[in-house]
Image (cartoon, rainbow, N blue to C red; front, side, top):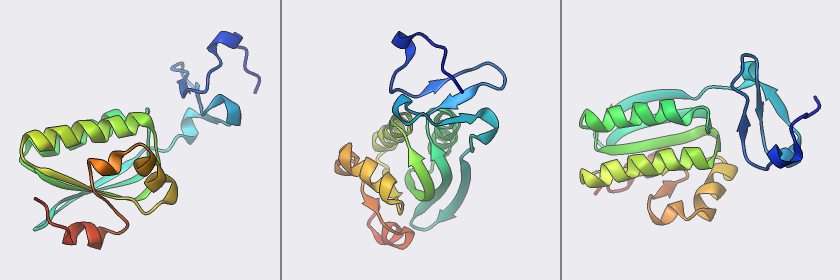
Length: 153
């Protein structure tokens, strides 16, 4: 697939062609292109436990999926779930847009004296949290059991 955009429009940023059948283009340097049909949605599962509300995410948390995830997490917080465990064990990718969504939810919870704990088993996802400094704000655990055993306050 040849890119016919002017050179000034070719960036290392994530790009989205909103036309029907448009392509979801990953960073320019990789040259990888996926059709909209190949873009996987994030699956969200919610379970309440005495240690907090577990929100399990599977798939990619990126610019395409973060709006829906953000709305779902905001609704949980608004409904009184102030101790969330974000289980990203099955999360394969998180982008800066996904990080912004998580940060927004963290701020909502903090304003309500709540807590957020994250489970990230995937090495890439853990590295993203570490290198962006996210782990200084939100504790990141390797397993769900560790996150549930940690104090929520």
